[in-house]
Length: 456
Ligand code: GAP
Image (cartoon, rainbow, N blue to C red; front, side, top):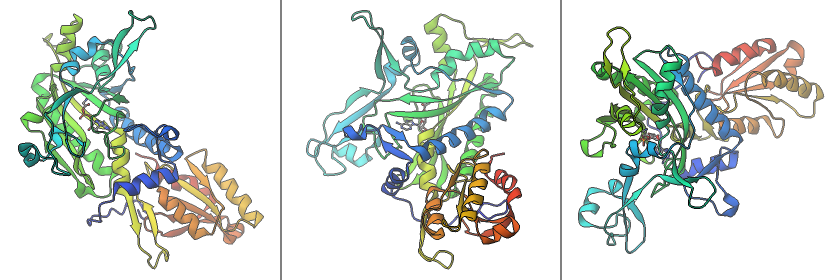
């Protein structure tokens, strides 16, 4: 990003970043920690540290702004993680939400059938050691839990396997308590839980993760129009927050890989060291959900058009993505180890995160720590800025090292208070990607920074 309006977006194909580099940075700088680490950890479950929670909140808020706040015909809800167990019978998850798994008799590694290369499947051969594979076994991914305390009276239910079910459950309430008419959408961000048989690749496939969903309710005759609309809208959204635009594509699902609720589906995929992988799914859910919930609950969930009086079950366009996968892909997309150059003689690790999403927006740095006037002025500026945006104050180590510390966590701007500041009340503003520096009056700082770090 330059200090003007433009973002400098690298289009050349820089090397794909190994996951281990991201895992190490995340732990070292407080983005992500293994859950229950002092007890040895739990596979597929993670906690988010001080910087991670800021990045995550920014990602969530930007999604909410783009989907709910600026679209007049879209509203948001927040549903509970636990629902009535019949929900998951109606949704088809109890019956169909399964993975088929084989195990290598030699090295004991497990593989999902749908992830095995075709030739290994045909030859019944382990893709790692060549050993013989077991017969496939089927596992349901739903996580069970129990409501109630008295043995024998406890009710078995599930932690939700996909967050979007609450939207169908609340659809009628939203309709009756608002003045919305079809076409309209309901959004939600929330946790989902899956007993993944092969969790792994850091945040990519977890057992507890967070999803964002739009369920857009339409008249059947308008399904195609809205499906195309939201498909493009979501693609552009992802394109707008990554540097490597050429690492994004659509992939249409073949008939035999469609989820049980989908008649048609496209994945928005991102290419990283893991290959081309799903980032978000755009699903043509048709009338599956509202019909099934009508049938299982006995409540009529059909819609009556206020003008034509036509009665029908609305069809649904779903856009469903992962907060955690977005978090991981953004880091993989933003991470760069820059060699020494004329601008930085030591080289640096930098996260080219979009300024809208960066966890810390500005760092305020006095040039020297032992000059009281510099420190006092820098603290004053910091105290003003921190009320407007997430800011850091840092006076430890030489200025070059402090810049590099901020580059590594993706801070888009550093403000340096030097001796000229004491004379004319101006500061240096250094921008992360191009390392360009300008001088700016202290009073002009808030507007200058806000314009660049707030989405619009
Ligand atoms: N309601 C539709 C649905 O749940 P999905 O393709 O299973 O569709 C949607 O999930 C998104 O949720 C995926 O595109 C991915 O970003 C995220 N996701 C799914 N399983 C995940 C997991 N085990 N760990 C992290 N993210 C996951």
